[in-house]
Amino acid sequence: MKYRKLGNTGLEVSEIGLGCEGFNEKDDDFTNEMFALALEQGVNCMDLYSPNPDLHRRVGNVIHKKRKDFILQAHLCTIWQDGQYKATRNIEEVKTAFETMLKNLNTDYIDIGMIHYVDSLKTWEQIAKGEIMQYALELKKQGKIKHIGMSSHNPIVALEAVNSGLIEVLMFSVNPCYDLLPADEDVEKLWAEESYQKPLFNLDPDREKLYETCQRLGVGITVMKVFGGGDLLSEYSPAGKAMTPSQCIHYALTRPAVSTVFSGVRSMDDLKKSLQYEYASDEEKDYASVFASFTKISWQGHCMYCGHCAPCPQSIDVASVMKFLNLAKAQGEIPETVYQHYMALDAKAGDCIACGACEKRCPFGVSIIESMKQAKELFGS
Image 1 (cartoon, rainbow, N blue to C red):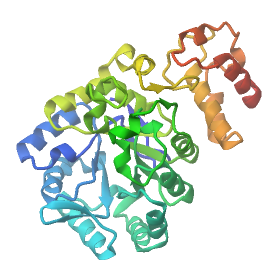
Image 2 (cartoon, rainbow, N blue to C red; image 1 turned 180 degrees about the vertical axis):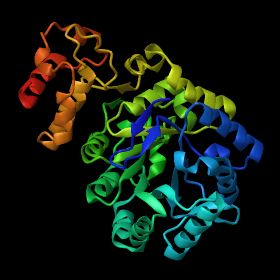
Image 3 (cartoon, one colour; image 1 turned 120 degrees about the vertical axis):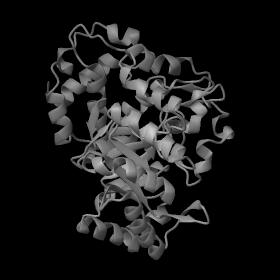
Image 4 (cartoon, rainbow, N blue to C red; image 1 turned 135 degrees about the vertical axis):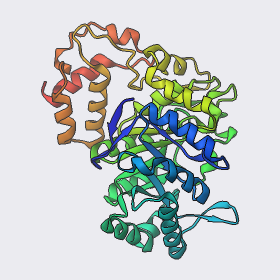
């Protein structure tokens, strides 16, 4: 298992984490078996969007002795009512649900307190200026949550939250189909069939800006919906062709600022398929070849950081140079952290001899030689 820094939080999370949806309505044996495999393979984090008290109890029983080594991302603004999940903005309900969650998890704190499901600017403004954010800040002051986060499907809302400085972690839906769609307050459109009827081209600029801003500001991204609820893994994929779990995971992990993918697992087989990512070959992880064959979608001219350009005869890590160049372009200047990461590369853009080998291998027709010239001029090396 590989581990990544979660933005500026100081936490290090496993690339593959556990989503909780598949654990609902299951028993102790199922939970124990799934966690035994996950922990054995180095998984050290889990998202708990569900307020299900039985789920919390079962998870708490498993990780209690490993609590300091296990990172819990759990959500504010969710309650358990009449045997089912419900989102709430009622501050008294939020407070009661949080304290109940701590008790059921048998813990004194949550590593990431995630303000749940904020998909409209109006809702974000109410939260940011209201009692919920004040409560989250007070919990952090008390040490009951270590870091404040927010979950969203809307890149415009998420960007507002990230730029506010109030959140340290963003939980966001990242996959190659959702990334094509413009921002909308109606989350249903992300998986609506009609959203994919017309040809789609390249990443939505608001989503790209969000990922790059998170990278620049040190806001770690934890990923939900990496398989699009399973749609991307089937013949009914909006892209017109099925992907594998490893390809979906690799796509998400190559986006700027992404630290971990909370994989939705409903069975031991699901978990094994997600964990297989850590053992997969470059060919098995390769999403670019699949993208190039999609009938409904094109990424022409857009660098996807897929690594098909390698190997470079000058040993330039072309994908990393492209990523740092795009981060600097998005900012309009060179952030210090981006400059430091660029200068740490063994070979720089200035080492490019314009042989064109990378461009011949690029599935998306990216003008890499021109980008290397731009990077050399921008970074001075």
